[in-house]
Length: 167
Image (tube, rainbow, N blue to C red):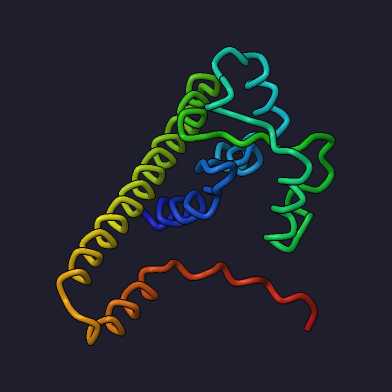
């Protein structure tokens, strides 16, 4: 893997968000990755709306957008837009490859699909680990409870760091 691919993979992984209980990517992040303007990406999607049912793509509500702005501590990323962003599920991102027909879109789509698969595998392995830990905990008495609690704390993903404002 080249350095550029590693940076792109990292950028993709940071762009996958959890909204409405689904892993999604926003139109602006996808447009940036594909090297097109967001309005052009949205325009291409709107020309092909039949390819994007509600389980492939949905538009964020104002409350969801405000929550994202609050969470990330900035509005500049989504500022200046007349509409709320569109969120694309894994299937929606895959469908984008048929709408955006460039070499870069194909390459980026492959990397995005791999990132979604990697995320799914991480979640599955964490569930397997939690299940095994539960089984072990049932078999041992209270003296190991502290050890099991410590392991569970280590398994819990850290909360994202909030950016400091000011000095």
